[in-house]
Each structure stands twice: as structure tokens, then as C-alpha cells.
Image 1 (cartoon, rainbow, N blue to C red):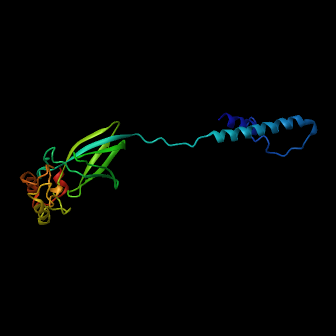
Image 2: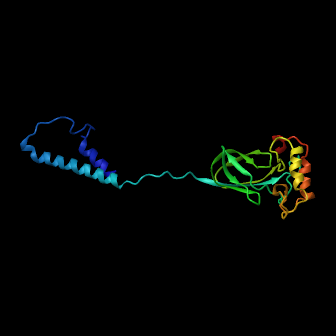
Image 3: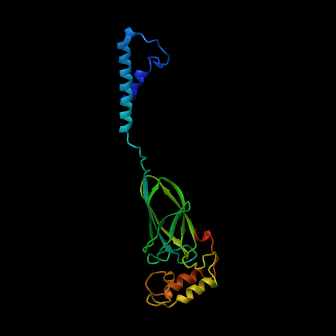
Length: 216
């Protein structure tokens, strides 16, 4: 900035007009003054070039964001009650504006590493579930959303739990994780055995039509 200020002083007069805008007649007796002016112009130019070369490319500071965590559990019934902490929904995507920003792990937990302050609508989408929307509001710190329930036996991925879904469940019923016909998606509590406990989850939704109302 000092180089720029010096250049402005050389190039302009006190009222802001360009000092050298008009052609002038060379007067030999004023040679020293011309030389001083040329020297000042050259020095100002050189200082501007040096200053420009020393500039570093600007970078935009990343916007500050906060971590957002939550958990997705299988619903136990149509009243919205979750089945329990063992009944985690694994591989459920969290989608905001069409982009997957997090996915639940084995413990059903998801973490969005950095979300800027604001209010968002996110979709919880699971391959064998009935998708649901949730609201995320970030203010000035990390956010723990708690737990969300999800219908986890929608194998046909539509708006009803019917014979097609039962067919998928029936093929796996009674199977253990060591069996070739074992289907982890039907083992709602992930204990390695598809038994009466898992069937109780499926049975609660059998024959039901699904809508957003099931999520309250």
C-alpha cells in the first residue's frame, strides 16, 4: 500500500488531476527537474512491480461448521416407539439437498462432520426402510439430535408392508449368521439369529400402509 500511495503522489497533483496529462515543451534550463520527475516515475513504477510480485494469492477462509450427530433405530410399532438400542439401522444415509452427508454405522449413529449454522431438512434413507425427513437446526455449536425411529422391514421399498415384504422375511426366518440364507437386514437386533424377537418387529407392521404420519 505504501508503493501505491507513492505512485499516486507522483502521478497526480494535489487536487487529484493527472500531473502529466498535458504535453509540455522541453526547456533545457529545466533539465534537472525533468530528470527528477522521470526518476520519481521510474521509482514508483519499480516499487509497484515489486509490491505486486510479493503479493500472495488470496485464500477464502472456510466457513465455520459444527458436528451434527444422531442415531437411527428400528421402530417397534406403528405408535412410533423405538425397539431399543440393539435394534440399530445400519447403512442409513443422511441426505441434504440431494447429497449424502453421513451414513449410520453398526451402532446406528451418524455424524455430519461440519454443518454451517442454519436450518436444514434432511432425509433418512435406508435400503429396506420407509424414508423419513428430519429437521436439523445448527446455531453456534455441535448438535446431538438424539434418536429417530424408522420402519426397517420395508423390503420392497414402497408404501406398504405386504406379501412381497413377507416373502423376503420368510426366506430368512430361523436362519443364523452362519447359514447361507441368512439375511442381515432381517436380523433387526443384530444378534446373529433371525428369531421371534425379529419377527415381532416385522409383525407389528405386517399389512400396514405407510405414510409420513407414522413418524409423528
